[in-house]
Image (cartoon, rainbow, N blue to C red; front, top):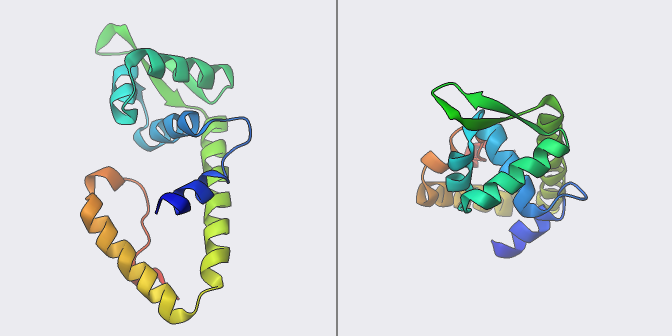
Length: 140
């Protein structure tokens, strides 16, 4: 699993660290987040989440908005450019994975898909809200 994660991360956007892309993907998945919520979701100190938001904003990938329920707070939301970056990275990673799966026989693909169902159950559906997950029934 660790090696698979590394290979998929190699498909990441050039010039963007894995942690920065992770923050961007988290914002994309949740819509609008307060900096504290981003920090919690990414297991970062607030100062690191603020720096990530600064960098993403400089690149035009997110924008800041005042928190409507807390005038002192600031939320970050993804921009169309940021959404395009996330979608492109996912497309690249999916293409890489599809190529590798196509090299396997049908029995192996079914076994992999069934293992994904078990892993999904172990992880829990809360962490995967809004993220499409492969299921055994998705295997051709």
